[in-house]
Image 1 (cartoon, rainbow, N blue to C red):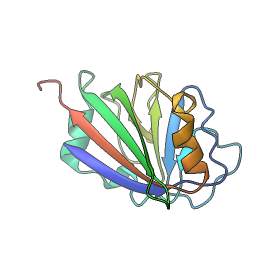
Image 2 (tube, rainbow, N blue to C red):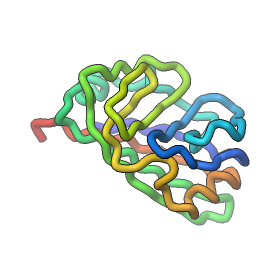
Image 3 (cartoon, one colour):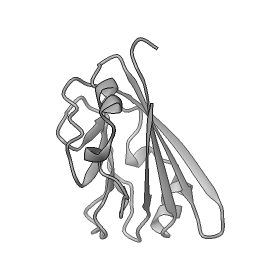
Length: 146
């Protein structure tokens, strides 16, 4: 099962946060938003299918976030962040998707125990997002039972 979100980079993308990464539906970003990778997301977690959400609510589920930035010149940069599900995931937020290296959960959380955060991303990907590249985020869940 998968969900796809499209967003775009912003000049204030710094990707310096060491424990989270975020995609937001907001159309702006201040320099303080050091976990935010992209703005103007076309979907929020609240729009995800019930079956996807249910599959993500298992601690043993694997959730992969594949981030693909495409520049105006057609160059692409890709990163995959792997985390897991959690029974507390609600996917109710109307604004932001947040992946976390911890097991903290709130209504914005889309995966926990991530193997990377914003600060761990390849700097070519970050630079492309800071230059306004389009971002495709594919979230894929592998249920615990395979």
